[in-house]
Length: 294
Image 1: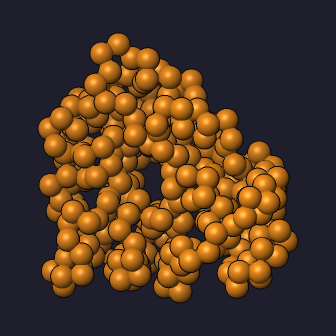
Image 2 (image 1 turned 60 degrees about the vertical axis):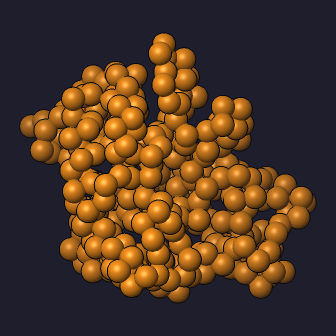
């Protein structure tokens, strides 16, 4: 179980202190995997919180697993290492444990995170995923990243990397939306066949704001999840997370709420039966909350 450190757009300042506190609460609760990104605008606070806990003697650096991400404006191979080095400097780390390509598409390189033209349309940029991947391989070889992976890649895009001539390191993981309403069975099976771990974001559905597809009902109000939760004296959220980890999916729930951070970790003291797993699998609606319309 990981803590995802995504902040809501437009609410960065109010989350800075909250983010650092959340990381410290999570470490105390037992979390060791933190899912971050330069584009979340909070890596300074995350690094500070990690180092405070190391100084306290609560954890060692080698026990922390930090995932960083390469943003869409940094796909050109010559930008990959400098971008990672910038993340390392902000975090005050010598390496990240996992570095991933956040999306299989690129925006125009530059200072703007979401570059747009005078009509407000996104300015895209041609990307060569294989060339970008080679630059990630070089970062791994240089010791700046222990492992490398991808995010939001479909089977075809994964095959581009896997079938690349001269491949040195294959992706260890693919971070995608995955939860009982969007179970990703085909992609999960393909990744299993290639020893690629699926890391599921939005494993509890997602917050109901303007950036998400709200036509799908709230996951945590699902009667099946709640009925199973009552049986085990667990919340619907804990059942949804347990479902994913029993399928071999790494879960990265996002929370800044201390009690929920702790609850999301308390999923290792019960198991779902085969029937319960099948009942939850049957909830799949094959619809995304995070549509990534860009």
